Image (cartoon, rainbow over all chains, first blue to last red; front, top):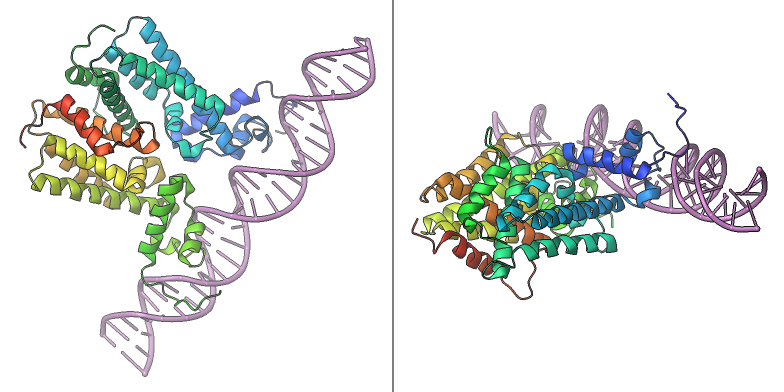
Length: 187
Length: 187
DNA sequence: CGAGCAATCTTGACAGTGTCAAGTTTGCGT
DNA sequence: ACGCAAACTTGACACTGTCAAGATTGCTCG
């Protein structure tokens, strides 16, 4: 090939991120390689380094993107009048639909946890979650209970441990959540 | 040094496993390296290969050990008359005390998931868990609910997301579990 | 409009990794 | 006591992340 591609890629950063997300979704975060990503995107082996500094830097960017994406969705369902259970279902849906992001976000050993961008996004998502449980009796315990449940459900589902043939995960999670947390009082 | 250590290590397999568990506890599963482990144990760079075939083979052994250990503990608390909630607390305690094992067990992309040993240990632990929920109304839903909760709690706690100053994790989990699942009926 | 500067990307190198094949040393059963 | 198989070593290869230095480009400011 030795293609006639332009020297400047245009949007290499996004291209590398997308390629990385593909790889993570298929092989997990351990499967990402800077040189492999460079190859997939059609760029020299050190191209990605310039945008992310590190391999950990790349994963930091993915984690940050994931946290802001999650915070956005939580804010949306809150704004749409969603109740406590709805918030949890948004969490589950996010973890399944954005599996690659989710698998990085909660593996702090893979990225630069002290990065200001990722820290800000992380606390934003945390606040959105905390706000959702504020209407419950004993909000602190409710937060731990709900977060643990949806996080565990999503994690187990993604690893295949909860696999039921022909079952829609969010529906299963919702029916379980209803029995755990009641029918879901307003707010 | 070029030590006068014997040609045969004695129990290299266990030594490598222990070294790997140390590394995982400190740096996560991504931090393990076959050559690094060999160095720590004081053996040539390809020594460990003979016992585990692969890097994935090493992690397979760790996962298998983890599942049987978990199954053992679940059986014990069941035999000691523990109820539904007690089983969950055993799960949480295991995940925290054997953090390194736990972090490998639920990352199937890291090891040979189809290995017969790990498969057997996995289903054994699964059965122990399933048996615990058999006394509940709607056992299937109860299993999903309880497993999701304890798994999520343990995972979040281990990543530091649930960190509360001076709080004993199992006690926190127990108090939450009691409000979720009732006072814990017998069996 | 065009010159130069900074951002973007390439090339080349180095240390470190997993894995394999081939040798060496040792314990153990017959 | 002998020999065989298990345990370990040595050496090699392809691959990885990271860095330094160079080539190419878009863009800003005169």
